[in-house]
Length: 509
Image 1 (tube, rainbow, N blue to C red):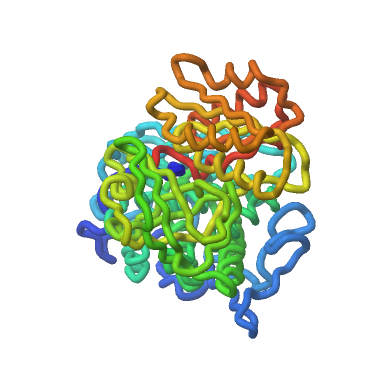
Image 2 (tube, rainbow, N blue to C red; image 1 turned 45 degrees about the vertical axis):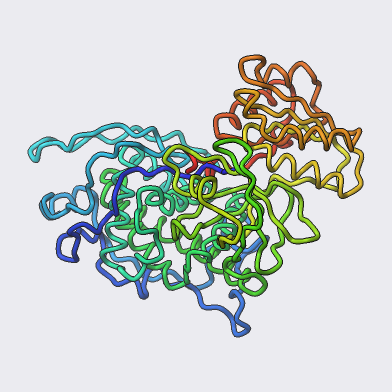
């Protein structure tokens, strides 16, 4: 399955055309990122991550929030209010890198953002903009979470500008990090900032946040990210937020963001250091077969250069030699095999760089790169509950992996698969699924073709499902509608599993 990733909020390479150190507003501070605010904690003498403070999981705290690192945060220099900065800011003509032309196509905003809206800059003599409406606040939220969510609510309407300004600051002030990103930033530009803001939004949910950050830390190894890069990102993040959060930003808010980013980055650094002990940053994988099932769908099988541990239902990130540093998510189309081979189902998306390269150009002998496995849509083998699986399009790939996983564990629990497609032609893997059904009497496969039947209606018809664990895989819209349908037929939300919608945003390419 080609797991959708973020589509660009703009075009071109942010901060590269005509940008220089003299004409970019550097925000509240002009440091070089080598120390100060976000200096990462050093590893311990054994080479592993430094010890955490607080209880529970790494980065956890007993009060339900992630604990700050034991290293004290460096003193914060006051930067004044948004109005103070506006009066002292350089003329807009000096900010070309920060304000690119309006984007042709927008990405879905991070969770917690309000839908973006067009906004024209007020004339210089216009009165100050009124305070934005205060977001609905959780009475149990920590003080830092309240301040951070206020910032996020304010910058929501200009999220694309915040993103552009973030990368302008990052690349101009720290050109050494530019090679970590693809040459064309139009499909990657807002992913890093969105991840940071998503993490900040969940800062009071320790288990969810720590798991999310640890996966990010492990995944960032494939980009060549080092602990020394995190201060540069933190400085650019604060600079971009303070530039656009003109009504909610003050010393207290800045301090909250510094504390939060310091903790976020430390959890990611520690996770990467721990992962480095037993796994490479990436795997080389040779294409051994390329089966074109339809004009735009291929099943690709690769042989990694070293053992690749993963669980059925997970996915990986993949880079092709045709588009260096452009990574896309694909689910494994089978359970782990004794021969170590891995298979993926890839659908070529119109104008999609990676998917078209894989479907139309990849051939046996080509070498790809794989990032670490990720995802929690896996089978709980300590339970005997039935499995209700909804797979749409190439989303049938991880569903097939789950079926194989149950079979290999020798279980005879009921597995019900609804295979959704827009036409009979799109049921490209139905023969494989029907063969599995013939081999395993506990498996039932039901194809559902849009136009002849609706997937939610089919699910309701064959219920009840309240004692089943549900799995949903496919395009983002199908996941959302599938989850809604499952809730309506009585499946508890905590028993519904799917890949994170924060990661499956917009359309894959």
